[in-house]
Length: 222
Image: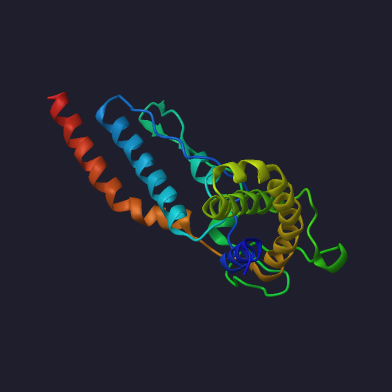
């Protein structure tokens, strides 16, 4: 099975696609009173949990969604403190999945792909999903063929043929990505529950964090 065919099957089987790709960002240190620090720590715990959940799911082109999950500054209005969490707006589709227009799966998802209007259910070349899958196929295909070519012919031969190999993989990846996107929309995008599960995972931590912070504030006020 060639590298493009193998990766095509990987994407189809995963039924999960991140629409972009980049690295996650690290949190900046936070300073403030005990309750503010506790609130920030709870937000950081939730975000780390969500990012880890994404890493644990078999997904394609992961990175941008996890990196987009970041805490805002804490807003204090009287006795109320608020912190928001930023995330790319398509997180809900990754979390809850999207029903395939033919399969109706995953059945519990509130979202669904529309039936295709083009020929043979093909997806438009410029769609976000096609672009993400194409980018992943090219990256993985180049990595695979470079390793194989280097093993068989050495570094110099690899450098000479790199440009031609890139063009070939790029052409193949575009048509393959369009096919894959159409199949995923037909069969559905699986649930990850990366966001939903993070609430449950963070709840116990939040209780302990705020209990400790309240004790510290009480002691400091004496």
